[in-house]
Image 1: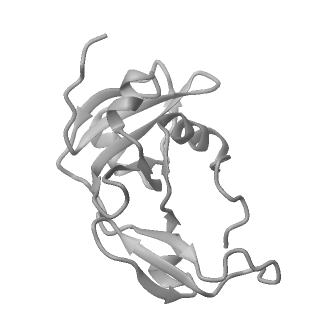
Image 2: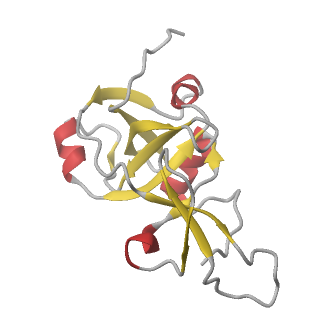
Length: 164
């Protein structure tokens, strides 16, 4: 197996079930979250045999942002393969939620006490997740195979399921 040299902006296709594929882009490293790699996942899905340009992928909307253990690991384990690079990295200030200040309290059904951060920035207490913060993603670092799973099912199976 050859070692693929990766750099920020690299684009990847991710094989999915039913002979479909999706796309991700490596957009940075988050020093405030275990120096993990950060990716953005596009909404676009195509048949595996479709030939799609990086520009076509970039025109589509973003499904979610995520921290991954290592983008290179995704190449090595076959979770995705490199298809190109783009300097267009999109929104580098996408919000992630770190925690709810009332997590663990069984009487709380919907938290209004959230801490949010952006890549390479410190946490900020925001209270309710509203406005721009309503699109905050869970900030936990996950494995490449879990990214492909979420692309297929719409959710991560390894995190607490009922966050709001």
